[in-house]
Length: 92
Image (cartoon, rainbow, N blue to C red; front, side, top):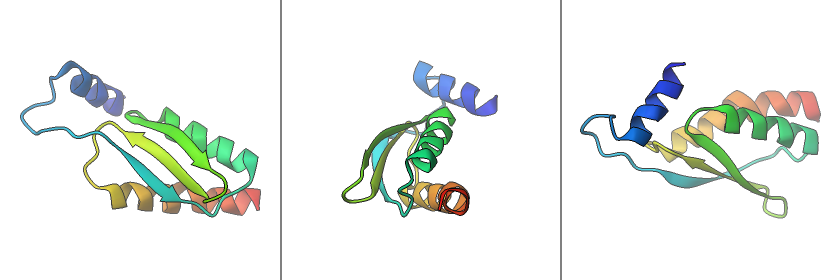
């Protein structure tokens, strides 16, 4: 709920003085299973302020958009460590 409110405040321009920067991030993935990728897409897209943009199967690279992008490396670590690792255990 707090994340949804924070995103709403950003969209409405009520987020305070800090300048907001949105952007795209490319994240290399080991996950190739279509079901695992679909689960990851659901997780990322349901996270407020993030959106699954593209997966390049030849390069194994996921592109996401983040509304309030502060640290690209932290996003990559979070997706790989928190989600991809567990999905690899399930879908390998």
